[in-house]
Length: 310
Image (cartoon, rainbow, N blue to C red):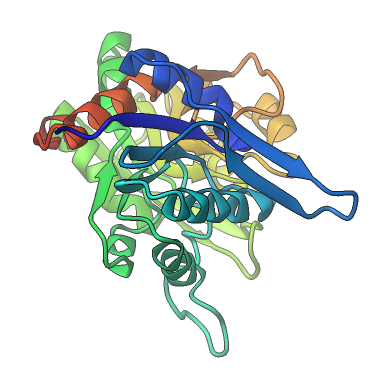
């Protein structure tokens, strides 16, 4: 007998989970979160999950309560005899800590992978990891989705002449190159130097900029310092316009103000993380239909490779 699908959400991603469940074709399951006065909290499923394939949707952006809430939900599902427990992380937090790049630091992404495995997940579904190799940190299957299947049709709809895809730093060159190959466009790569996190000291670019319509592409935007500096530099060097497509809108600190004051024409993001406030320069494309379709395919043991445009 086929297992029943049940979709639940942590509190930080309920806004997105409701859209995913609607697109999937069933209501979101009931979860209760009891909070104590000292900040401790307890989660529980308000319906049976015995023998069901449970999908728990929760992005793990700060605070760390979001990650711990997900771990508690996974543990609760395991102890309630769920058949499969799939953690759906539209945004996988701690992903920037994917290697030991200096002495005596933690590899946070690996630690989170260990915690999820220990809690009892049987599969991970996520989108645009900061580094592809993070998939190897898990001992369970990982379905790694790409926002390119949403962004590329949008970029094509703009019908921009003299289009160039750009990477805001050397680490994003592979992603920008994949977009450029699909769109048959030119590529620009920015080179930045920084002495401390979130602060860019200097920046230059490799590639033709003058007269080009530039689209910067990256997996996440935090303070917006790199992106806005890159946009301003390119326009100063003669670019016709500069846009950006960024999957995860972390947008911390003065990011919103920086974007509003920048020369960016438009910032296109997804709803893996909710915006803290509206902005005339920020356009949100939803990933709900994509995740709902992948949930259907995973449950029915079907291929998801058709979603991998580039």
